[in-house]
Length: 85
Image 1 (cartoon, rainbow, N blue to C red):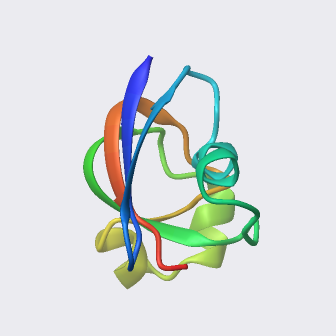
Image 2 (image 1 turned 90 degrees about the horizontal axis):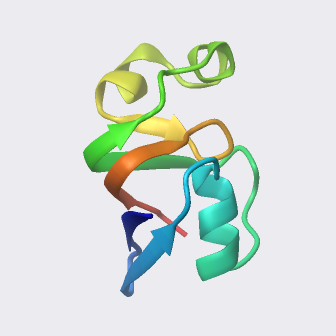
């Protein structure tokens, strides 16, 4: 199980997640429904490799700043990320 920390504008959520789940599915369980193309900013931890969809959707400056698509990103260990609701 991975420890996941979701930093929202108004609160911090601590969750545990089994491997094989995208950040989108974790957010939907802990926060509620969001747009599948929502970008989150990784603060720390290890995530899956950037996908082609992310390269097509997010510009290079956002990718360099740690932004990822929640629907395309899998935590590979403990992970902390920002969610701007």
